[in-house]
Image (tube, rainbow, N blue to C red; front, side):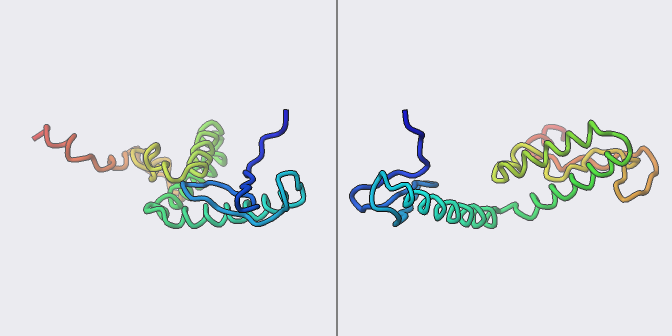
Length: 149
């Protein structure tokens, strides 16, 4: 049984093709389905195009800045936890960073982009320590607040 290829030979046009996010991309390399050199050239061209498309898609995300800030804050928090002997929390934050990076489009749905909501002020990642007062809770949707009135 042969290996599964990432590209498909398109006989009608005599080239390799790849369908990605609902659009078909044609890669004009090779002389046939069995031309391995042409396939490798087409695959290299596709990987370059794929990276370009992913970057364009990421830059177009509406919450891109918030996602980047969320990653930066988690990195700072993880460093603080690591420096203060709390490796478990540092590892948890590292896993959150990996999760955000692996699927930034849906990161806002799964995680708070600002990880500092509800964290005691004694855990201050700028080096200051102080009271045990909690930071304010994140804003609540109107639907959850209205029944309180």
